[in-house]
Image 1 (spheres, rainbow, N blue to C red):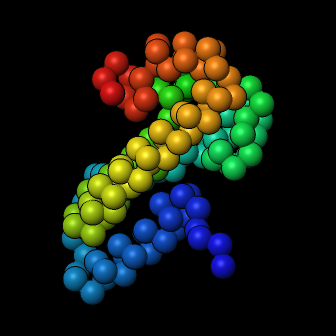
Image 2 (image 1 turned 90 degrees about the vertical axis):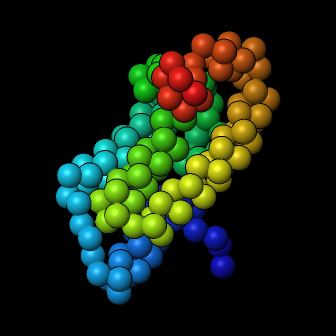
Length: 146
């Protein structure tokens, strides 16, 4: 059996696990944070469509892009799709005030950081100096910060 992909983990399995745990613990819902759930998912989904339309390739790096995408959301952040995952998980943790969701967020930060480093190596191999110049001017995670 194939392991679930990142999007299945983040947007399906993690919420099911959190909702199950919180059901038995008694929900503590803070609806003001729920928009982070929509923001994170929509960022992941819409940026993914944008990247595939402009750069080709498949989901993730399973099928590498044919061209480097440096415009739109990629002009501000090198990993807006992964950032969408993390925003969604932050929303899950805050909306349900869930320690389990917070732990999944922290684990995902480390998992995505490792994935990003592997992706960057592949992109360097594919696009060389063009990717290096892009990486030098655009931050990995947050514009102007990290």
